[in-house]
Image (tube, rainbow, N blue to C red; front, top):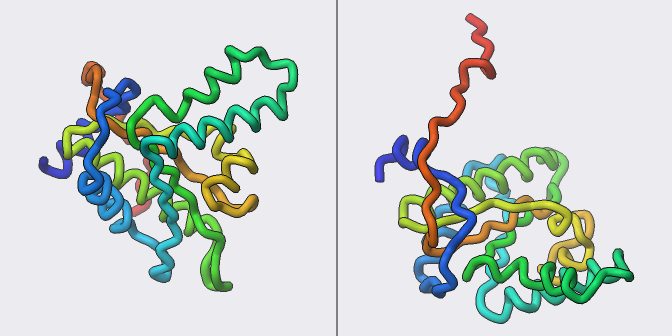
Length: 185
């Protein structure tokens, strides 16, 4: 797939099949993510790949955390939260390291991790996979961070859900850049 076709044709795919993905395919995505630009060659991204029961374990942690914050939540609500990581056969949690030295600032590490996410999304699209980038409260949840091996003050940049598309969204024309650019000559 040509790069501009990938960039302009990639779209969020929120419904994917439950079919497992081969590890080699997931490793291709991680390799693409690791090619992202990063200041001072810091490689500040951390990938946690959840498949199979790993997704169920994450769902249990999310449900327990939700129950702690919402003690009156009905069982159906807890079950709904528990099922969130099961929406795709692969979930990649992407975290960003804190700066390791004084010449690196946190925004650079977050930007590099976000670039790694975009590379993963583009690679998934090029391989015919569907993917969606999610964050929300779970990216800030202390119990979720702990389960994934991230420090409480470490950022989770994304949960990328990946699988074979169940339904491909209709292509649409995206808004251009024209209203978001200033030329200084």
